[in-house]
Image 1 (cartoon, rainbow, N blue to C red):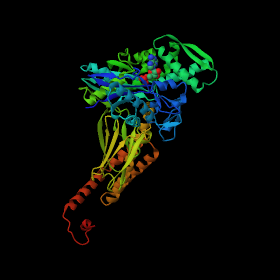
Image 2 (cartoon, rainbow, N blue to C red):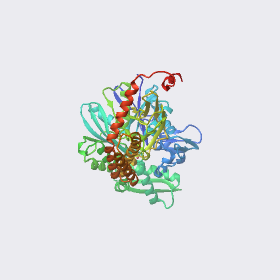
Image 3 (tube, protein in one colour):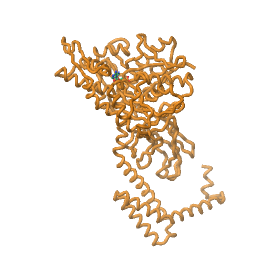
Image 4 (tube, helix red, strand yellow):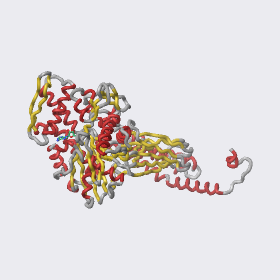
Length: 615
Ligand code: AMP
């Protein structure tokens, strides 16, 4: 079997590795560097520069240098948040269109920028190994939605890879960590704080099986946010007016370097040669100043950790270990806050920059057969379902379900002689369909029949890459449609955090609306059925009985108009009980009709059934 490489495609840096003689090895470029900055510089002529040479061009020509492209992968223009616009290159954002990154007069899709980085990693790996590599495992933040995963896969393909698997970053990190502990059973938290994203995952390791119990995070929270605060603070400190783009880029490099040094030093000097024309600028910065500024950003991770623990139904004390991943976790303040959140000193035995890439490499080894006896299970970050009659969300795959998996449910029609059923696929935690994110929709045609007769099976299959295949089948005709939901721009990838926060905030209203809608659907259905039954059975029930039922029908309509849930529920129950004898009579009639129809029918002139076969 051919080699498969493991790739950590990071917001700030990317790495590539391969299994050699049973060990995951990270490969270095010609200069011996294993970290490749995820930066692309587009010069006026010639090929784009990638990695460290591109980083060097950033202060000189910030507008032509793209960094943090991962923040925009699979994102639509109207989904961009204001803090995202804080980059030194131009963003092109049309409503409903994928965001494009403009540098050197060219508009790139974020996946195309990622492909430049992946192509360089591929070239470096091939140079280091002396052979070609064409298959890859690529990691993504656990919270990447379908669109972002697809765009990442496409980036890999553009770079010339066959992408064998998309793996969640915290899962990969845990794999790197757990490979040495295959015999023990443990529950761990992976706290992954990178340049652009924050993820926390709770995993269970058991005899070589990794199961993700819960994940939470924010695709727009990272070290970049600390950098922006530092630039604003230091910029105001050293200059009266606004910063030019070049000054901003130079200041960014200086404060990022300062931030890194303050992870080990208490106080450092920041020097900016020729910052204001011929004038150089220098100032000192202390760790406590950095801590004060960055604390609010780091504190935002606390709520995500609490939610992940709650979803996994665990208390901090139930965890055996907390692993730190991502460059930002080198900050002492991050380590203190993590210790406070989880009530234990975090494990820093892994190199936070390399754990994800090592895990991706091990996963690549599992796929190529180089590593055995390890299985990887993952979970869905948000519930997946379809819209049902009355605008309700019907969950088919609940959030935090282990993937890959298949789940299905049977549906029927709500209207007589309906010819098509519209399947609207939704992602989210809200009770009403309109409050969830539409992933796509399609129609399934079937033979007209009275309402409630058709049987349409809807099956969701989430594959190992987290891509969703939706199948709808008319069980009578066998007619079916399968749709792959992987459109890069149809999905809103608003932070999952916002969705969950919203669902908690609106939980009470949502539940009441759902309860009301369900009671109303039942009332509408019953009112229609009772009216029909009264008509059909007019000669079989007493006038007294009919009047009593009509009275209850009137009350049902009044309850509907009142908008009072309890009143409607009572009216439903009262009418339901009062019409039990009617239902029994209808059933008897139906049985009698059915028995009558079993009798052979004479084929002769004037019998409609006889002509049916000839038509
Ligand atoms: P990653 O996305 O995991 O590569 O993490 C990159 C982020 O970690 C960037 O925001 C870096 O500035 C930050 N980072 C890297 N090294 C350090 C360090 N020694 N101290 C503080 N932050 C760091």
